[in-house]
Amino acid sequence: MKKHIIFPFINRRSVLKAALLAVLLGPVTTSCTEEEILEPTPLTSLADVEAFANPDRVLAQINGLYSSVKNGQFLGGRYLVYIDVRGEEFLNVTNNGVTALQTWNHTNNSGSNEPTNLWNQAYLAINRINLFLEGLDANPNVVDAALANQYRGEARFLRGLTYLSLIQLYAQPYTKDNGASLGLPLRLKGEVGTGNNDLVRSTVAQVYTQILEDLTFAEQNLPTNYATAVLNTTRAHKNTAIALKTRAYLAMGRYADVVTEANKIVSATAPYRAATGVAHQLQASVATVFTNYTTTESILSMPMSSNDLPGTQNGLASYYMPIVGIGDYSLNPNGILANPAFTATDARRTNFVKNDFTGDAGRNRLTKFPTGPQHTDYVPIIRYAEVLLNLAEAKARLAAGVDADALALLNAVRGRSAPTAVYTTLADKTALIDAILVERRIELLGEGFRSNDLLRLNQPLPAKGNIQAVVTTASVYIWPIPQGELNVNKLAEPNP
Picture 1 (cartoon, rainbow, N blue to C red):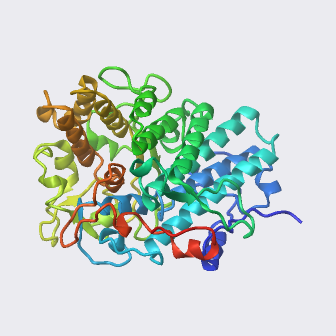
Picture 2 (picture 1 turned 90 degrees about the vertical axis):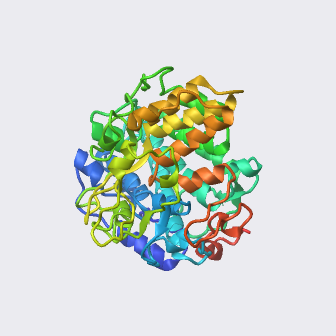
Picture 3 (picture 1 turned 120 degrees about the horizontal axis):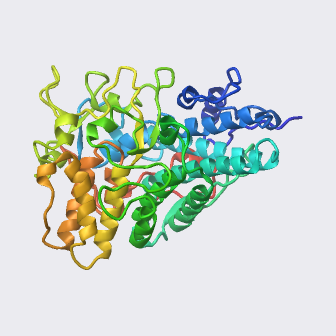
């Protein structure tokens, strides 16, 4: 009997059935086009001997792994929303219980849908990745060795990205206690039965160790670039892995390592650009990045098309734009909008903040993601602007005083959108770090960074509207481990 690759490590039987239905196959393709990157067909429900029968099927599985990660319940939409609305930049407008309301008002519990659905989708993606890696090892002669290692690099990059996303939401920050707190069940083998459901939670440090191992392997084995701008934006290459390592090291407070990694893809002086691989650099206008999704500033994005959408109430625009979706969240007038560093003429304000929607009571709305009612905006996962700010912060924290390189990096991002408001000098190291953190709030607004930045700095989640601040010792400071996981994994401990 052929062994079928299925995905049993899902917390409930109903979810498992849905997952199996979701991977029913259409016709098998025989070549890979840019359109297939936008609309991949995962082949991982085939018997393994068939799934690895020829190179085209192996490539189709790779596309399917990306598809799993970009699901609207995960990095194709909701993860970014959850991370941002946990912070103070947005106010809930609709009181809609199915669009991140419990995340916004900090009332999620272990039985809530938001932490449960995201966990299930992320671990489904992880299991698919693990099964793919094992299947590739078991079928060594289908593709040549170099291409096989590239595929392993892509799969391990996606696994590292998934675990990094989860560890920052469901576990205490690494910087709290050098990673000694409970992390995640670290699943590194494919599961085709329920016999291995029981698995202790590794520590935060152990999870980060695995993330870095995956990303380092990816860097060593991924190609320097692909043949088209679409592929350079939607599939991982060497610089993609390097860029994500700067994020991981920043979350760990390992600032010297941030500098080491960022220096691989950031030139020593302005204009900043990656010297090898894809020539990443800032675009002249920040607006370009959100209309042309495949510029060299976009290091990794999740592509969407009219036939491959993030799903109902998952698209970013549906959360923020009242004319193309429900518009559940408006910008908090007492958040970053009130900061004097976010000037009236800043291009990020004039392009992405609007308050003239009919019937919207003059609310300020984020318009970075303007398409709808079909939400075909690419979802930004890594941009070069983030890497420059990661490097700026790391250099600023390592220096004794006002680091000139950090200031120049900060001004590169700031000056692109607010050329008359760059910093000529700052009073001291603390002032420089504060300016960089404010710039992250402006530049990365709505892209899934705010609460993760607060947590890595061990800061409270600020008050907003009628919602009180969440102190670092509160149980809701991090998300709960879902009850479904606790039910089937007897060795998993809940968050205190």
